[in-house]
Image (tube, rainbow, N blue to C red):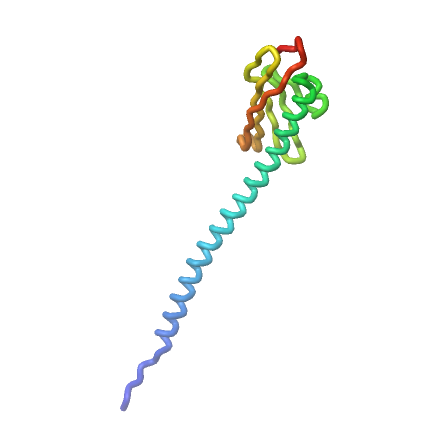
Length: 134
């Protein structure tokens, strides 16, 4: 009487190991996709923030430092140290803070925030009209 060994348990073990390897590989790939998605979102936010901050800077230069005119043009509000603009479309807040000035030059820092998190900052300066030193 010959005794033959059943090979089914060995095949089942190979399939379980293959499923485990594929599960681990898919978990690593999924983490990569999530990281790439977050990186893409952050890049889009920074691009939008850069554009909005540059708009504020250009308005300040065009108005030669008249922050009240800039607030009126961009629907912002004047603060003690500069101005604040809420962009509801991008859910972003742009803050301009005056830093220092000379007789004809005003310096400022423009910062963009999303959910109270600073995502973009640019330092700028513009020439003021004669006699309008703040």
